[in-house]
Length: 74
Image (cartoon, rainbow, N blue to C red; front, side, top):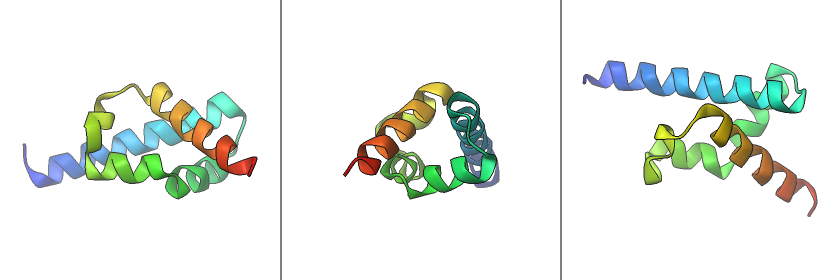
């Protein structure tokens, strides 16, 4: 797999996670994007930690949302 194809796959994965986050929580795409990119989970996905990119989009969206709600209550 070329580096370009890895980048394209990662971009598609991120877009799908953001869309899932938006749909699952009644958020605008902009709000979902902001929440995603401020999460520690997004950094882990970018770094390829624990093969998170292999998990389903909805599962990852749930992780991001749980992280956001945990930070929101502090």
